[in-house]
Amino acid sequence: MIGARARKSLRVVAALLAPALLAPPASSRVGEKSRAAQVADAITEIDLARAEALLAETKTETPALAFERARLSIYRGDCDAAMATLARPEIGETKEGASLKALAESCARATVAGFVMEDRERGIWLRLQDDGDRALAPFLFEAAASARDAASRVLGTDLPRPLRIDLVRDLFSLSAVSGLPLTAAETTGTLAVARWGRVIMLSPRATALGYPWQDTLAHEIVHLLITRASRDYAPLWLQEGMAKRLETSFREPRPFDDPGWGDALAYKALTEGRSVGIDRLGPSIAMLPTPDAAAIAFAEVTSFMGHFLERAGEPALKLLLADLRGLSDRSPEPALRSVTGMGLEDWNADWQRSLLAEPPPPLAPQHEGRGASRDTARRARLSDLLLQRGHARSAAEVLAPIVRPEQREASVRVRAARAYLEAGDAAAARAALGTLTEIDGVHGPWFGLRSRFLREDGDAAGAEHAVQIAIAVDPLAEEAACAGMRRPRGSNGSDADLPVAPERRALCEAARERLRR
Image 1 (cartoon, rainbow, N blue to C red):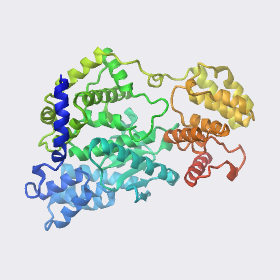
Image 2: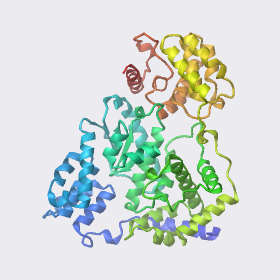
Image 3: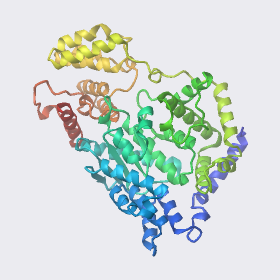
Image 4: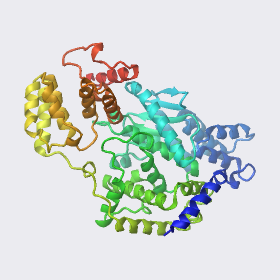
């Protein structure tokens, strides 16, 4: 246990020494490493301009340098160039070369029809597989820049421009571009990864109800920053724990944010004997055997890093990243002991004692994972079919018996409100939608419809806040993209039911085009 006086001294020393220790370690200075190793370090640190300059200065091309040249191409997202370099037998037939060549080939196939959009002012490079995602680009640029800048301030490092992002259409493409095994992605429900110096992320259109893509993007950007700061020597518990803690740091708090979920789920898993263990995570949380194990692992590392920051302080984190950067092997133990005086085993025991000594509040409802009852699911499906056939009033009446105060499933309330609106009964639609206290989690169309009703009531600020939340979780749902407005069935609509702002208008049109397919 670190005492109060020791913690205070640690923070003071950390603050004084951090600038010096964040400089590259002596072992990375020119002349003390081979040129290939220097290039490899630059690429790992996502300093691609420095890697390119080092390669340009090289007078002779060795197999090791050629391999790093191919790796640089992968980091730049140019998989075709990597394939060309790896075609040389002395490179492509080695174990490492063959692995990189397989990735380059699958990446090239997956991105062959892709196109790049770039926000030069913010320093964001975005490659899309589908033209239908083009309308998402402005929102993605804004979220990526905000997330990068917010996390950079906490971690004391930054990313060179441009920050590269691949937005892919499905898990097959995610696997092909990133190299993450498809089975692992399917098992744990992986939505994005930070690999090869960039974020590779599923389009929100890939899932039926979207997903919190902004927070997911921010999470992966934190991984890139930590990889750069530590030269990829940060252990998984630090990587994932800080990524979870910082994934919402770029935005204002939203309904159903639950800062204590990590402590609550970690405590529950520990007391029920289901703990994964911060020291038993394997190579990646995405490769754990079940979604439940992945959820527990995320909770444990989030709770653990909260404990670490409370005990040691933020300057100690920056010192630790700097010390990790200078490691000669993969064990973080020397750096952890150097900075805090304690090893991982001691920190783990200290965290668990603290968690058990002060049990956190129980999990909020949205983390309990309750499913819809069979009757609710049957009624929802029948209501959908009736609405599709133009029987709006009947569709609403099918749901009426289950839209009660205790009915907290936002999707059911949205279906009922949608049906009442199409039947011309706005008052019943408002009642069916309910309020924030009557739902159990964030749902894009629900917040889209809420924004519509708030706007009709003259609450412009509340309406804007609601539609921002809707877009943040399900941007290609019509109610989310169109601020609660739905095009009347059988109508081509008009400009009157489209948002005024050009970027919002384009997103609304993209959502409606998706419905027509």
